[in-house]
Length: 313
Ligand SMILES: Nc1ncnc2c1ncn2[C@@H]1O[C@H](COP(=O)(O)OP(=O)(O)OP(=O)(O)O)[C@@H](O)[C@H]1O
Image 1: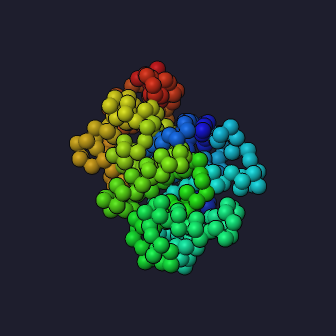
Image 2: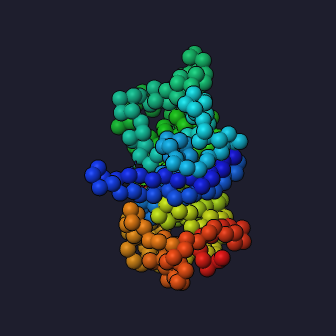
Image 3: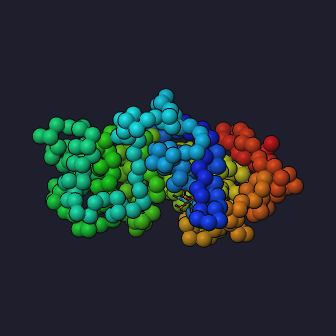
């Protein structure tokens, strides 16, 4: 369904003294049909940038994204536009994803009109159907986003996304702004919708418990690189990369599975504009060897997964 091959993105910072930040530094993975692939890592490791590059909401500097056999990276604007309904994104902050002065009816009708998906006369019926599917009622049609709760607005955003019949959705921290109980409702709604519509999903989160619940395969990012990928179950049971091991054991000890607030790993996160040489994790790695400082590890297959670590070469 989706193949991401060695994508890269560097941002430049500063007007006079330019500095460069490799936000995504050669990331590759694949997502199968109806599969949810999780991307986890501390704040600033490049998760959102990966999601945006895949959808070409941002241009990659290098690499390819192949979606259902089509190389998205090479598409011109008109062809990309045709592809858009099939690849959608769900953001963290539903309230700001919706136009504050548009009623819910208009918000859900907008994508249907934009892509001419149903005849004008059927739009109202389709909007009601979509809202009901995400657990909202007719009475919500005339309301504005500020009159709904965060969870209800996220349902509206999901209805807008589903209106387009997507085959692939990037869910970028879709529940991080919500209360825990509402989070659980939205996550199970997403699962239900995935069963019904059969889309594939890239699920981005800093919350390991959410990744564990929602995904079948996952990747762990550190400073723009994927350090480990594999079946979610395997990664949690037998994490291989020392970074993944540290993440999982640290959150178990702390009792919280969120990586958002503070880093659970010892040592300071390196400056991403001046990253360590060799393996980027070597400055914090409890199993560091001489080679780690000098040579960047290759990605190697270990069991059913992949790891970029000299311990496995
Ligand atoms: N448009 C941009 N211009 C310049 N720098 C950017 C831009 N977007 C992201 N960055 C930088 O790239 C790095 C990766 O950011 P990104 O948002 O992808 O990380 P993330 O893992 O999603 O973090 P978070 O969980 O905090 O959203 C960060 O250092 C960020 O400051």
